[in-house]
Length: 501
Image (cartoon, rainbow, N blue to C red; front, side, top):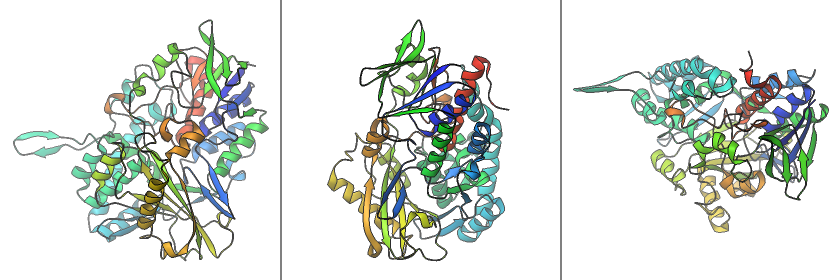
């Protein structure tokens, strides 16, 4: 039985902790804040309850596998999952609206043809077919296996972009998501739909490789799922599973350094000066040179260390009077008119004049005090804290008002119904999670020579492993859960571990 220190109590870290405890190891989790869950936060007041991070679960099979392998009680006996249908409603700048059914290719085709014109659905379906090929090509090396040292497989773009013939000039293929929208989808609304998926994950469509097509493919193929009570319930169930497996949690314990002895990780040093010995250390937080010994950092973080901070999320939580109207859609995306301008602002460290806004309206009695009220959450991807001062009260109020105005296109009589509005910005995310600038890590992507990969789970320092959204295979609840499984496999089986089969 080995002693294992886990830094952070996010979903990836807890996923690793639960699996390692089941394997017979003594696991202690050190969390800088006073609670578990990482980005799966919750805000509650006067009977209204809101998710402060992701609001839907994709690829629930990741957590079904985790709960089956860490105990006799499956996931669905710990939380209630409901497939969201329609998966999303989209309001485009020209006034067109379309609701997309969940996990139904034929339904999506029919809906797009009816809303956008004959042929739009077919073009989207053909795009998803190519995205499916990319999924088949990259699923194992990108999601189910530890990142290879040479990274050659993941560096190649798996998306089979058709060649675009041009008169008297060489044929070209789409290399970015924005080029797919312009060259293959041939409709600005379909392009906006595709861009919206990338932006929601914190990716710039102009730079994200064509392999980012996997993101809409995963959602539309495997579905979108709502956890009753909010995503915080999933974090709570994972925490309880860890406790059941005798994982020890120490809250309010900030780790300032991974200790190294005789050329391997030997424990953690805490802010209060104490030292905890360990045979293995799992880092479930954002790696940094101040936290990780230099010999490990060189191998795990240099590819991303020089990049600008990733975007964060601006969240407005609205407590509304009045009941949720019949037929209201759980998730509506209000697309902006100038997508390029928004992208230039978000990824250039500025505030977009008119952002794309996601409106979440769960039909869940546990999120509201009674049936005469409703809890609605507005979310926009924004530049991180630093380039933008998200602590500025006037700026926060002004931008929250912009989001509310956009959301009013989706929620009838929104402004007149507001009882209270609470705002959460990247500044709060940075304070709560320790992520620089309040950035939210995006999923790893193949292609672009490996520029969108995350540091591998195994580091150059023996005994030190990386789990969670800042490591392979990247951000989001499902990907973080996968990283926990990969770390557990590497610790239990050693360097010969090649992923689950």
